[in-house]
Amino acid sequence: MTDTRQRLLEATAETLRKDGIAGVSARAVAARAGCNQALVFYHFGTMPELIQAATRAAVDENVDFYRDQFARIGSLAELLEAGRALHDRERETGNIAVMAQLMAGAQQDLLLAEAARYAMARWCEQIEAVVRRLMADNPLADVVDAAGLAQMISAVFIGLELYDGVDPVGSRAALDAVERLVVLVDVVDDLGPVAGRALKSRLRKASTAR
Image (cartoon, rainbow, N blue to C red; front, side):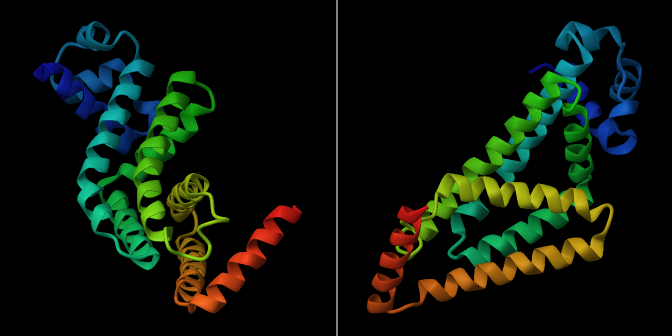
């Protein structure tokens, strides 16, 4: 990747953080990157393509940053704690603001919608791997769809990130409620073999009856 292209990607992400998607223009990005604005179109074609590339690069960097931490998670409670830490870091770095802007722009632009889906897919991939590993021996494993649960967790955290900017107290209360659900899953995981088999049987019957 050329130095100019990298500077444009970083400048675009920074402009999203500071000025919002309405403030992202070829002139603004080029000025922040310290280059001629014609280079924006030379390297990326259009502004939506540049924004898409910049947000993809940011997501890839963040996923790589957390990869080892996800691999060390040993319980759903630890996954939630990692989520809290991720939430705090992303808010401090301004990445929550970028995601909020991306989600807003996605309503009107197909390329931005694609970038938002890419971001969700990258995070879901990491979370699903953790969920599958942690739920392998849990009595709920037979009735819980790991992929669906990973998508739900990702959606919850993105929703909380956006909610946090409007109502921080409500956001923390919602996260506390998620934590209580995680405690319930851990309690189920601690059931003895007899109770565990009984619960599995009951859950299978309930699932079949739907």
